[in-house]
Length: 117
Image 1 (tube, rainbow, N blue to C red):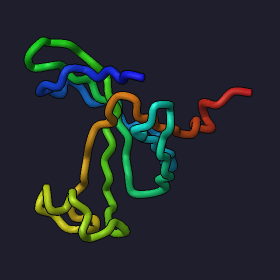
Image 2: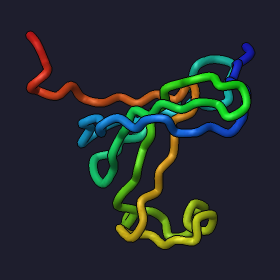
Image 3: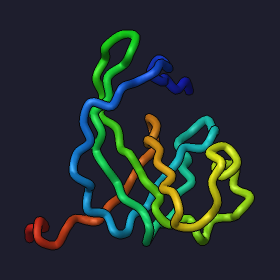
């Protein structure tokens, strides 16, 4: 099995949508197996999810991605690598935001006001 990934390059954020209402969600990340296996974990508090439009700085390709901002990191391991990389500490002091890569999944509940029966 061969996984294909987009060309890595620098991107510019064109637009950030209003946040996607997702007070509770499950994130799933692919694991390196010859078949589809994902590691999934549940997030209940302290995050926001956004739809972000990006454009490649080199080839001009546009894409949409999910942006995740972790607002409350007080329950994270204080030795987490992200704190060393960004020079911050655990807690609510600074949000940690990232994009969801290709082949990663995010499960969010449907808003009850938008659900149909």
